[in-house]
Amino acid sequence: MTVRDITEAVGAGKSSVYRTINQQTNFGAVFRKRKSKRGRKRKTTPRTDKFLVHNSTMHPYKTSKDLQRELLAIGMSVDSPTIQRRLIEAEKFARKPIEKQLLTPAMKKNVSIGSGNISAGLYKIERRLYSDDAKRLLVMLVSFIKILLHAILLR
Picture 1: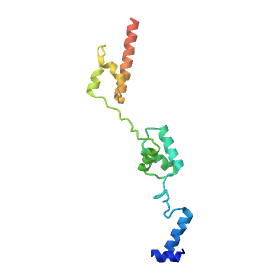
Picture 2 (picture 1 turned 30 degrees about the vertical axis):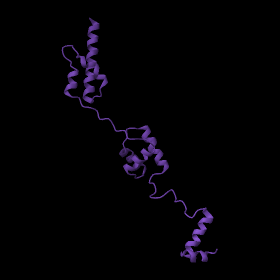
Picture 3 (picture 1 turned 90 degrees about the vertical axis):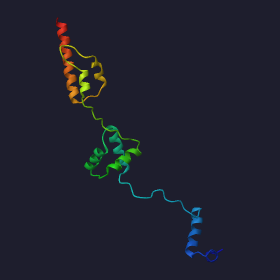
Picture 4 (picture 1 turned 120 degrees about the horizontal axis):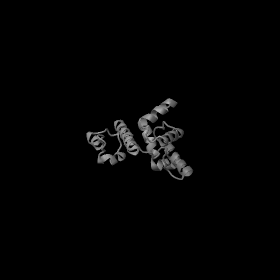
């Protein structure tokens, strides 16, 4: 059967029939598979992705904004959500920096320095995460205990 006979029998255009026959003979199917890469091209290269993953591994508490600034210093402009997506693709999920808890009055009650006695709540201090004020208080407390021990040993 010729192309002309098929076009008359089917009622399609000559070029359409010819293209269909060509696809069948060349590819083994009338419909070709779609190409896998569609849509917008990636803004980051595989090398940039490796840089982001490595940097995130070395400094796990860096935010995507920090990584964005580092890439900008190199000369590459990438949005913060893009960086987040690249890290998620590499299974590096977000770690937020810890905000230290401020010293509350209840916490201050646990540590009382006065007339040589130390309250029973002192042992809990090591288990807590304190602000800079609390660290200064803790350093003062440790130095006070050292002075007390030194005074007791000299007697």
